[in-house]
Length: 120
Image (tube, rainbow, N blue to C red; front, side, top):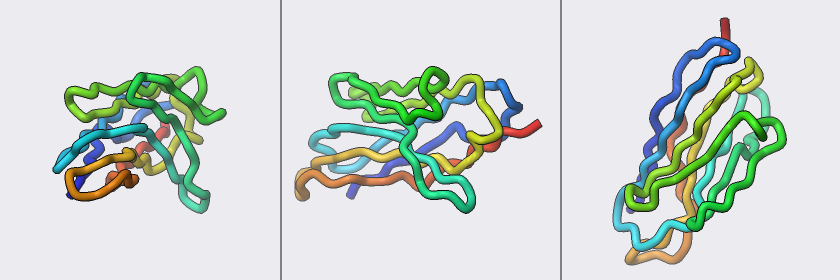
């Protein structure tokens, strides 16, 4: 079994910063791409950022230049540094990872989500 646990969400003022973390644990053999998506009330889930094992990154258009994704492969952890936050960034943020375990082939696993609220 694989678990992804996010942390670091909360309330921040417009223009502020937050750093989210997501740690994967369990019978992990390998983690390929990791990433973050978000879902605001009444909206579809959208891509925020992805990062490969080698460190190649990709960003959704609305966060490019403001958010930075990174990962520590030794800790099975990905991070999302969010700067210059806007009210429209308010959403539940979910991390995910494409994981190979000792008993299952490559599957995508999701975290439970962490709330980010940008408001004055």
